[in-house]
Amino acid sequence: MPHAEDQLESEFTPTLYPPFPPDLPEVELETISLLKLLANDPAETVRVFEICKGRGFFYLSLEGTPSGQTILENSQKIAHIGSRTFDLPMSEKLNYTPKGQSLFGYKVAGATVTDKAGTKDTAEFFNVSKNDMILPESEMKTAWPSTILQERSVFTDYIRCAHETGMLILRVIAQGLGVDPEELMKRHRINELAGDHVRITRGPPREKEEMPEIQTPSHTDFGTITLLMNWLGGLQVWSNSSRSATLNDGQPTDTSGTWLWVKPKPGCAIINLGDAAVKFSNGVLCSGRHRVIPSPGTQGKWPRYSVVYFVRPEDACPMQVLKGSGIPEGGEAENEKGKPVLTAKEWIIKQAAGLGTKFSDEKR
Ligand SMILES: O=C(O)CCC(=O)C(=O)O
Ligand SMILES: [Fe+2]
Image 1 (cartoon, rainbow, N blue to C red):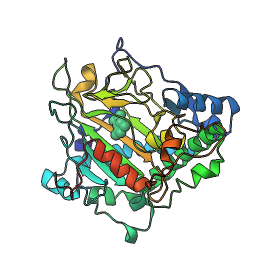
Image 2: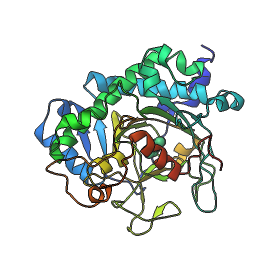
Image 3: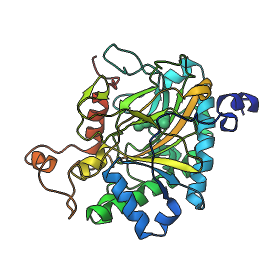
């Protein structure tokens, strides 16, 4: 091991974190049981669909299932691997910035702006491609640091379990939408090329108490389903549904509301829907607006890590509204008629460019 254990300890140390402070405005998210979903529990299934039409965010209790256990254990291992990787010299990390139109690799803090004044984000990301971690090593498309390559099996196991969990939720959603579940499954097959990835994030400790810096600015995720593991506060969701909100400086302006904290819940992942789910369902499903600021109170003394898995449509998937008894005609579906249909790969590149991601082959 290139790093001493004590050095790892000082970076990602959930056992030392102080509790989330009381008396902060928190969102009350429902807790869904993975065990019950796996058993096809009818009431749990209905709850998931209702949440996905509403806020689009919930806790998923992972305990008591083998895949849930792998997600709990390997997410911590991945955060440790992230800590070692982020500790590499900047000159080395920059070798892994995305090439061409790829979104995989290292994102330096400050690569995007968080408001009109040009204030930069403060979080580093390492976006680790699903395909590169699960297909034979000889088929890898991107170069990865040895800190990641030498632990490839940790990612492989994690991705298999996180993807399978995402697919289970997609199956439940398909039932609610009156869509043949196979229609969603065949758009998210694990072995096909897609933008799916594990994102490891690290945000620096809080600098000031009042107006904190923004680690990750207000956004909705691009993909279909996100499975998020975090240990310190910092994630916030917009209090009201942000469906078709108009933004000003990253804040929804035409829907009233405030930012509410999402308290990390031990034993649980946080699940949220992304824009592809909204697209497929013609707006029936909702992708919740969220952002990350430094952890509150004394938690803010620690660097903040999170491990995010994005389930996205396969690269070649046409981004079109699906047909189902619970999906209305009109709206987006009507606008699509006669227009060229983007593939998921093209669509995600367009969404990312809208969020301020600059591709290395762009002039700006
Ligand atoms: O770090 C977190 O808790 C959330 C990260 C996030 O929203 C993202 O990477 O899309
Ligand atoms: Fe996100």
